[in-house]
Every structure is written in C-alpha cells, then in structure tokens.
Amino acid sequence: MSFTVDRCSACLHAVYPARYLCPRCRGSDWHPVTVRSGTLLQFTHMPGKRAGDDHLGTLRTDDGPLVIARLTGKAHDKGQRYALRLDGDALIAAPESSAA
Ligand SMILES: [Zn+2]
Image 1 (cartoon, rainbow, N blue to C red):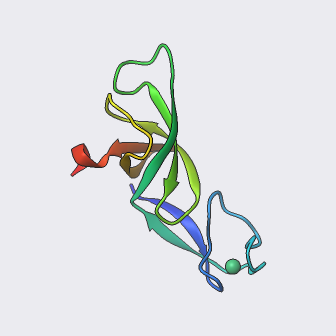
Image 2 (image 1 turned 120 degrees about the vertical axis):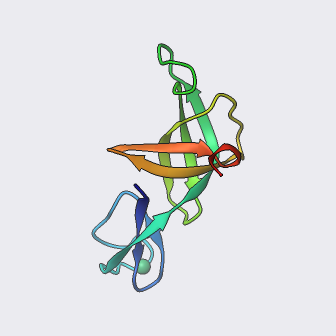
C-alpha cells in the first residue's frame, strides 16, 4: 500500500501528520500526495528484534515532511535512499537499491 502525506492546495506545502491549518499560509484545503521515497537522516537499533527488521529510522521524504519508519535490510547509512510503503499501520522503508 502506498504512503501519502497532505499537500496544501493553496501553497503546495506538504505536512505529515495531517493538520487543520497549513503552517505556511494558514490554508485549510488539503489533497493527498503519494510519497514513494526518502533519505535517511538518523537510525537506531532495536534490541531483541530479528536481523533485517531491527532498525528504526527518521527519513526526510521527497515531499518534505519527516517520518519514522521501520528499516528493512541489514546495512544502513545516513544519506541512503529508501522506498516507502505502508504495511498495515506500519511505515516500511526498504533500501532503494534492493527495492528496485
Ligand atoms: Zn499552504
């Protein structure tokens, strides 16, 4: 399932999570935009999870908003590109090189 953020119809500023008023222009008309990828800013190891499913990362989406996602794969680096998708309620980020 694809992941969406809300884009202001007036000024095109994107936000996540959803807001009532745009922080840039105070507009209140939004439309969803599919976000397919982002860049890893920070990540942390979660002890006790199985390998390949044991990292949580903060990513800057290509549309601007920051998101926190579960990282798949074993090697992670700041600046690395990830493909984003929803799995139920969980946001999953897979390294773009292996997601292609
Ligand atoms: Zn706006």
